[in-house]
Length: 152
Image (cartoon, rainbow, N blue to C red; front, top):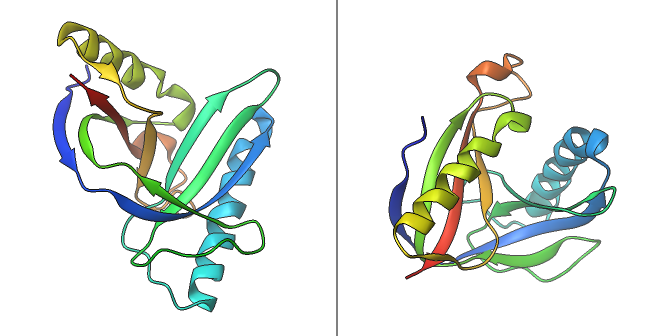
């Protein structure tokens, strides 16, 4: 059972890498992208101020994906790393425990909540990853926060 909470978010600058990725390559692509982002930000002396996040849109034969890190200061585009942002405003959120591939019910719960409350999605949702999946290999303990901005 997923409980949906409402939060008011502040707009957050981010550094992101975007690509189109086959489903069976998502895990390795994200892992590599977060490493690339962290190294780049360290090299340009920009601090991260939050946890890794991802936005995914299922396309034909692949996913349009974005891996990102919240940053203290806006960046300029450089070597495939782009400035981005997470929007401010009202957001419906819920928590998923388990493998990323099993998170669909969290999205379904948020969609049902939006419908029940007469709200509409305002842009794409994103996932925030709590914990370190590189060292915690037990996928049943992974915790993902699903965030969906909305309008009333």
